[in-house]
Image 1: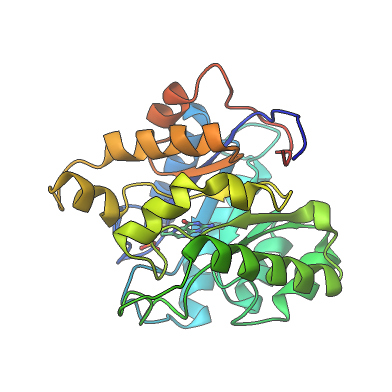
Image 2 (image 1 turned 60 degrees about the vertical axis):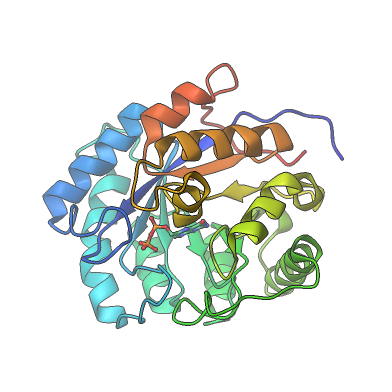
Length: 278
Ligand code: HH2
Protein backbone atom coordinates (compact mmCIF):
# COMPACT_ATOMS: atom_id res chain seq x y z
CA UNK A 1 0.00 0.00 0.00
CA UNK A 2 1.22 3.50 -0.80
CA UNK A 3 1.81 5.80 2.13
CA UNK A 4 0.37 9.12 0.96
CA UNK A 5 -2.68 10.43 2.82
CA UNK A 6 -5.01 12.07 0.31
CA UNK A 7 -7.47 14.78 1.22
CA UNK A 8 -10.98 13.40 1.36
CA UNK A 9 -13.29 14.66 -1.37
CA UNK A 10 -16.98 15.09 -0.70
CA UNK A 11 -19.37 14.15 -3.51
CA UNK A 12 -22.76 15.77 -2.88
CA UNK A 13 -25.83 13.82 -4.03
CA UNK A 14 -28.26 15.67 -6.30
CA UNK A 15 -31.11 13.41 -7.38
CA UNK A 16 -33.33 14.97 -10.03
CA UNK A 17 -35.91 12.21 -9.69
CA UNK A 18 -39.49 11.72 -8.49
CA UNK A 19 -38.65 8.49 -6.64
CA UNK A 20 -35.18 8.41 -5.03
CA UNK A 21 -35.21 6.70 -1.65
CA UNK A 22 -34.18 9.78 0.30
CA UNK A 23 -34.70 13.05 -1.57
CA UNK A 24 -37.46 12.06 -4.01
CA UNK A 25 -39.09 14.89 -5.91
CA UNK A 26 -37.32 17.68 -4.04
CA UNK A 27 -35.16 18.83 -6.93
CA UNK A 28 -37.22 17.97 -10.02
CA UNK A 29 -37.57 21.62 -10.91
CA UNK A 30 -34.31 22.71 -12.64
CA UNK A 31 -34.04 25.92 -10.61
CA UNK A 32 -34.46 23.97 -7.37
CA UNK A 33 -31.86 21.42 -8.52
CA UNK A 34 -29.30 24.09 -9.45
CA UNK A 35 -29.92 25.84 -6.14
CA UNK A 36 -29.35 22.57 -4.27
CA UNK A 37 -26.15 21.94 -6.27
CA UNK A 38 -24.93 25.40 -5.32
CA UNK A 39 -25.76 24.71 -1.66
CA UNK A 40 -23.85 21.42 -1.72
CA UNK A 41 -20.75 23.22 -3.03
CA UNK A 42 -21.07 25.91 -0.38
CA UNK A 43 -21.22 23.20 2.28
CA UNK A 44 -17.98 21.69 1.00
CA UNK A 45 -18.73 19.37 -1.91
CA UNK A 46 -15.85 19.11 -4.38
CA UNK A 47 -18.11 17.18 -6.76
CA UNK A 48 -21.87 17.27 -7.35
CA UNK A 49 -23.26 13.90 -8.47
CA UNK A 50 -26.36 14.49 -10.61
CA UNK A 51 -28.71 11.55 -11.17
CA UNK A 52 -31.97 11.21 -13.11
CA UNK A 53 -32.78 7.58 -12.32
CA UNK A 54 -33.29 6.01 -8.91
CA UNK A 55 -31.29 2.85 -8.25
CA UNK A 56 -33.06 2.01 -4.99
CA UNK A 57 -33.87 -1.68 -4.50
CA UNK A 58 -36.74 -2.72 -6.75
CA UNK A 59 -36.51 0.34 -9.01
CA UNK A 60 -37.49 -0.10 -12.66
CA UNK A 61 -35.19 1.50 -15.26
CA UNK A 62 -36.42 4.78 -16.74
CA UNK A 63 -36.11 5.66 -20.45
CA UNK A 64 -33.03 7.65 -21.46
CA UNK A 65 -35.27 10.53 -22.58
CA UNK A 66 -36.44 11.06 -18.99
CA UNK A 67 -32.93 10.99 -17.61
CA UNK A 68 -31.74 13.44 -20.27
CA UNK A 69 -34.61 15.84 -19.65
CA UNK A 70 -34.03 15.79 -15.88
CA UNK A 71 -30.25 16.01 -15.73
CA UNK A 72 -28.78 17.79 -18.77
CA UNK A 73 -30.16 21.32 -18.20
CA UNK A 74 -29.05 21.13 -14.56
CA UNK A 75 -25.55 19.87 -15.39
CA UNK A 76 -25.15 22.50 -18.08
CA UNK A 77 -25.90 25.29 -15.62
CA UNK A 78 -23.80 23.89 -12.77
CA UNK A 79 -20.78 23.08 -14.96
CA UNK A 80 -20.85 26.46 -16.69
CA UNK A 81 -20.75 28.23 -13.34
CA UNK A 82 -23.39 30.81 -14.23
CA UNK A 83 -25.13 30.16 -10.93
CA UNK A 84 -22.15 29.14 -8.86
CA UNK A 85 -19.16 31.29 -9.68
CA UNK A 86 -16.70 31.48 -12.54
CA UNK A 87 -14.98 28.14 -12.10
CA UNK A 88 -18.17 26.09 -12.37
CA UNK A 89 -18.90 22.96 -10.44
CA UNK A 90 -17.15 19.65 -10.97
CA UNK A 91 -20.14 17.53 -11.93
CA UNK A 92 -20.46 13.77 -12.13
CA UNK A 93 -23.36 12.11 -13.92
CA UNK A 94 -24.87 9.13 -12.10
CA UNK A 95 -26.07 6.96 -14.96
CA UNK A 96 -25.76 3.50 -16.46
CA UNK A 97 -26.68 4.71 -19.96
CA UNK A 98 -24.13 5.62 -22.64
CA UNK A 99 -26.48 8.14 -24.24
CA UNK A 100 -26.92 10.02 -20.97
CA UNK A 101 -23.19 9.86 -20.17
CA UNK A 102 -22.36 11.27 -23.62
CA UNK A 103 -24.81 14.16 -23.29
CA UNK A 104 -23.59 14.97 -19.77
CA UNK A 105 -19.96 14.97 -20.87
CA UNK A 106 -21.00 17.18 -23.78
CA UNK A 107 -22.32 19.89 -21.43
CA UNK A 108 -19.38 19.81 -19.03
CA UNK A 109 -19.65 16.83 -16.67
CA UNK A 110 -16.18 15.51 -15.87
CA UNK A 111 -16.98 12.24 -14.13
CA UNK A 112 -19.24 9.32 -15.10
CA UNK A 113 -20.53 7.48 -12.04
CA UNK A 114 -21.78 4.15 -13.39
CA UNK A 115 -23.29 1.88 -10.73
CA UNK A 116 -23.18 -0.96 -13.28
CA UNK A 117 -19.43 -0.47 -13.81
CA UNK A 118 -19.94 -0.46 -17.62
CA UNK A 119 -21.78 -3.81 -17.52
CA UNK A 120 -25.15 -2.49 -18.74
CA UNK A 121 -23.77 -0.43 -21.64
CA UNK A 122 -20.08 -1.29 -22.20
CA UNK A 123 -19.71 1.41 -24.86
CA UNK A 124 -19.76 4.02 -22.07
CA UNK A 125 -16.12 3.08 -21.37
CA UNK A 126 -15.03 4.30 -24.81
CA UNK A 127 -16.96 7.55 -24.32
CA UNK A 128 -15.22 8.19 -21.00
CA UNK A 129 -11.85 7.43 -22.61
CA UNK A 130 -12.54 9.74 -25.56
CA UNK A 131 -13.60 12.61 -23.32
CA UNK A 132 -10.59 12.26 -21.01
CA UNK A 133 -13.11 11.95 -18.16
CA UNK A 134 -12.92 10.07 -14.88
CA UNK A 135 -15.23 7.16 -14.07
CA UNK A 136 -16.53 5.59 -10.89
CA UNK A 137 -16.99 1.84 -11.24
CA UNK A 138 -19.24 0.36 -8.56
CA UNK A 139 -20.02 -3.19 -7.49
CA UNK A 140 -23.65 -4.28 -7.66
CA UNK A 141 -25.03 -7.81 -7.63
CA UNK A 142 -27.17 -8.00 -10.79
CA UNK A 143 -29.50 -5.03 -11.24
CA UNK A 144 -31.51 -2.71 -8.96
CA UNK A 145 -34.83 -4.46 -9.71
CA UNK A 146 -33.68 -7.75 -8.19
CA UNK A 147 -30.44 -7.08 -6.28
CA UNK A 148 -31.90 -7.36 -2.78
CA UNK A 149 -33.61 -10.72 -3.44
CA UNK A 150 -31.48 -12.93 -1.16
CA UNK A 151 -27.97 -11.79 -2.09
CA UNK A 152 -25.35 -14.48 -1.40
CA UNK A 153 -21.57 -14.53 -1.36
CA UNK A 154 -18.94 -17.03 -0.21
CA UNK A 155 -16.85 -14.06 0.93
CA UNK A 156 -18.35 -10.70 0.06
CA UNK A 157 -15.07 -8.77 0.33
CA UNK A 158 -13.01 -10.99 -1.94
CA UNK A 159 -15.86 -11.24 -4.47
CA UNK A 160 -16.39 -7.48 -4.59
CA UNK A 161 -12.64 -7.00 -4.87
CA UNK A 162 -12.33 -9.50 -7.75
CA UNK A 163 -15.27 -7.85 -9.53
CA UNK A 164 -13.74 -4.37 -9.22
CA UNK A 165 -10.38 -5.67 -10.41
CA UNK A 166 -12.03 -7.16 -13.49
CA UNK A 167 -14.03 -3.99 -14.26
CA UNK A 168 -10.91 -1.84 -13.83
CA UNK A 169 -9.10 -4.08 -16.35
CA UNK A 170 -12.06 -3.75 -18.74
CA UNK A 171 -12.04 0.04 -18.51
CA UNK A 172 -8.30 0.18 -19.11
CA UNK A 173 -8.63 -2.19 -22.08
CA UNK A 174 -11.24 0.20 -23.53
CA UNK A 175 -8.78 3.08 -23.29
CA UNK A 176 -9.54 4.71 -19.93
CA UNK A 177 -6.21 5.48 -18.23
CA UNK A 178 -6.00 3.72 -14.87
CA UNK A 179 -5.50 7.06 -13.15
CA UNK A 180 -9.00 8.05 -14.30
CA UNK A 181 -10.71 5.10 -12.60
CA UNK A 182 -12.18 5.27 -9.09
CA UNK A 183 -13.72 2.19 -7.46
CA UNK A 184 -16.72 1.74 -5.14
CA UNK A 185 -17.82 -1.40 -3.21
CA UNK A 186 -21.50 -0.48 -3.69
CA UNK A 187 -22.84 -0.39 -0.16
CA UNK A 188 -26.49 -1.54 -0.26
CA UNK A 189 -26.37 -2.79 -3.84
CA UNK A 190 -27.19 -6.51 -3.51
CA UNK A 191 -25.98 -6.79 0.08
CA UNK A 192 -27.50 -7.74 3.41
CA UNK A 193 -26.79 -5.77 6.57
CA UNK A 194 -24.00 -8.22 7.41
CA UNK A 195 -22.48 -7.89 3.93
CA UNK A 196 -22.41 -4.09 4.27
CA UNK A 197 -20.80 -4.27 7.71
CA UNK A 198 -18.22 -6.81 6.53
CA UNK A 199 -17.29 -4.57 3.60
CA UNK A 200 -16.91 -1.56 5.90
CA UNK A 201 -14.83 -3.54 8.40
CA UNK A 202 -12.48 -4.82 5.69
CA UNK A 203 -12.48 -1.78 3.40
CA UNK A 204 -8.68 -1.66 3.51
CA UNK A 205 -8.65 -4.83 1.36
CA UNK A 206 -10.48 -2.95 -1.40
CA UNK A 207 -8.34 0.17 -0.90
CA UNK A 208 -5.37 -2.13 -1.58
CA UNK A 209 -6.45 -2.27 -5.25
CA UNK A 210 -4.60 1.02 -5.45
CA UNK A 211 -7.35 3.21 -6.91
CA UNK A 212 -9.22 6.03 -5.12
CA UNK A 213 -12.13 4.48 -3.25
CA UNK A 214 -15.61 6.02 -3.35
CA UNK A 215 -17.97 5.13 -0.51
CA UNK A 216 -21.73 5.65 -0.45
CA UNK A 217 -23.45 4.86 2.84
CA UNK A 218 -25.50 8.06 3.03
CA UNK A 219 -28.92 7.58 4.68
CA UNK A 220 -29.06 3.97 3.46
CA UNK A 221 -31.55 1.53 4.96
CA UNK A 222 -28.92 -0.70 6.63
CA UNK A 223 -28.20 2.22 8.97
CA UNK A 224 -31.84 2.27 10.05
CA UNK A 225 -31.75 -1.50 10.49
CA UNK A 226 -28.68 -1.22 12.73
CA UNK A 227 -30.42 1.10 15.17
CA UNK A 228 -33.76 -0.69 14.93
CA UNK A 229 -35.38 2.55 13.77
CA UNK A 230 -35.81 1.77 10.11
CA UNK A 231 -37.51 4.98 9.09
CA UNK A 232 -35.63 7.09 11.59
CA UNK A 233 -32.77 9.48 11.59
CA UNK A 234 -29.81 8.07 9.65
CA UNK A 235 -27.39 10.97 9.90
CA UNK A 236 -25.44 9.61 12.91
CA UNK A 237 -24.92 6.31 11.08
CA UNK A 238 -23.97 8.15 7.90
CA UNK A 239 -21.35 10.13 9.79
CA UNK A 240 -19.98 7.12 11.68
CA UNK A 241 -19.60 4.99 8.57
CA UNK A 242 -17.92 7.80 6.61
CA UNK A 243 -15.43 8.35 9.42
CA UNK A 244 -14.74 4.59 9.47
CA UNK A 245 -14.26 4.61 5.71
CA UNK A 246 -11.87 7.55 5.92
CA UNK A 247 -9.80 5.72 8.52
CA UNK A 248 -9.69 2.67 6.24
CA UNK A 249 -8.36 4.74 3.35
CA UNK A 250 -11.42 5.78 1.31
CA UNK A 251 -10.96 9.04 -0.61
CA UNK A 252 -14.36 10.11 -1.97
CA UNK A 253 -17.48 10.31 0.22
CA UNK A 254 -20.86 10.36 -1.58
CA UNK A 255 -23.33 11.99 0.80
CA UNK A 256 -26.58 13.95 0.95
CA UNK A 257 -25.62 15.86 4.14
CA UNK A 258 -22.42 17.48 2.92
CA UNK A 259 -22.04 20.10 5.66
CA UNK A 260 -22.43 17.61 8.50
CA UNK A 261 -20.08 15.03 6.99
CA UNK A 262 -17.55 17.75 6.12
CA UNK A 263 -17.53 18.71 9.81
CA UNK A 264 -17.06 15.09 10.84
CA UNK A 265 -14.12 14.63 8.46
CA UNK A 266 -12.64 18.05 9.26
CA UNK A 267 -8.96 18.20 9.92
CA UNK A 268 -8.50 15.88 6.98
CA UNK A 269 -10.33 17.98 4.39
CA UNK A 270 -12.52 18.30 2.52
CA UNK A 271 -9.93 18.88 -0.15
CA UNK A 272 -10.44 19.93 -3.73
CA UNK A 273 -7.57 18.14 -5.42
CA UNK A 274 -7.43 14.83 -7.17
CA UNK A 275 -8.02 12.01 -4.72
CA UNK A 276 -5.01 9.74 -4.47
CA UNK A 277 -4.96 6.03 -3.86
CA UNK A 278 -3.08 4.86 -0.80
N1 HH2 B 1 -25.65 4.95 -4.17
C1 HH2 B 1 -26.78 5.40 -4.79
C2 HH2 B 1 -26.70 5.94 -6.09
N2 HH2 B 1 -25.52 6.05 -6.73
N3 HH2 B 1 -23.18 5.74 -6.77
C3 HH2 B 1 -22.06 5.31 -6.18
N4 HH2 B 1 -20.87 5.41 -6.82
N5 HH2 B 1 -22.06 4.75 -4.92
C4 HH2 B 1 -23.22 4.61 -4.22
O1 HH2 B 1 -23.18 4.06 -3.08
C5 HH2 B 1 -24.44 5.05 -4.82
C6 HH2 B 1 -24.38 5.62 -6.12
C7 HH2 B 1 -28.08 5.32 -4.09
O2 HH2 B 1 -28.35 6.49 -3.37
P1 HH2 B 1 -29.28 7.70 -3.87
O3 HH2 B 1 -28.73 8.33 -5.10
O4 HH2 B 1 -29.47 8.63 -2.74
O5 HH2 B 1 -30.68 7.04 -4.16
P2 HH2 B 1 -31.46 6.67 -5.49
O6 HH2 B 1 -30.66 5.66 -6.23
O7 HH2 B 1 -32.77 6.11 -4.98
O8 HH2 B 1 -31.65 7.91 -6.31
